[in-house]
Image (tube, rainbow, N blue to C red; front, top):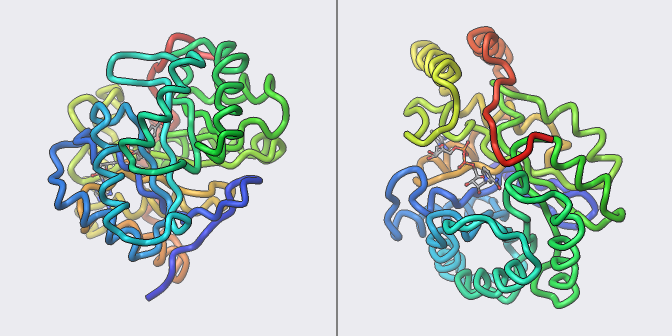
Length: 319
Ligand code: NAD
């Protein structure tokens, strides 16, 4: 069995599997998932070499953290064999990036996850908060959590790429260890690429989430709540139909597209069936052994040309 590649995450010393397990589907975000299926997904992912698991108190109103925690415990392996990231500041009740809330939040998360520490705690979707509060209050609170040993590394997540430079330009070096960007290094939108040299210059680890553009690049299509424009949804649907007709799998090609850039430490994909876990791991091992199907990717890029790099609004400021 080919093993899945591990990549360094910035300066953290962590080695993340290049395919990461996005646990938002375990909070039933993409439709119902039984606890049995959730356990089976986590077990199979770990067996196949995935060591990185990402969740948030926001996913399924804390359900994802609880289900992931149980599934990880059931693996029965030493804690240092897997890497867990969760988030703070975004909850089903709304956003709160205050020092008081995020300090309480980690204790709640650790209890739900049944863990003594998380490897990474990330401020979740900072474009919905005051970026100056993130710099001056939230991150200093997370530094205290780091000192206490409840978290090992600090991260920030968001959709508009400008939020990362805003924060990283204002915090002391090595304060923010990792950024999680989503939906910006996929076949339809590759705008994260331009930011990679800057992130490297800051020694910040890079995680790219939602390689399937939250379901746009799947045969089944996106969930009802997907924020893309009708035009973008239609173009992706046409690309998926084209691949199907050619006997190709658009999700596999999309995974391989995201995995190809080694400046991205881990590609976090949401998975809610053992079949998807196996498919996404196979996409990585096939990329490492056979390479990319450049021809079909460029045909998909042609189909998506009119919507290339189209995104959607997110947050209270577009910096
Ligand atoms: P995604 O692009 O990974 O797509 C997930 C969807 O694709 C789900 O419906 C899943 O069932 C389906 N899927 C997965 N593998 C498939 C395959 N091989 N074939 C067909 N369908 C497949 O989007 P996502 O789940 O939103 O993102 C991944 C993870 O990244 C999340 O679970 C979360 O952990 C993280 N994330 C974080 C943020 C943030 O912090 N702001 C934002 C987005 C995602």
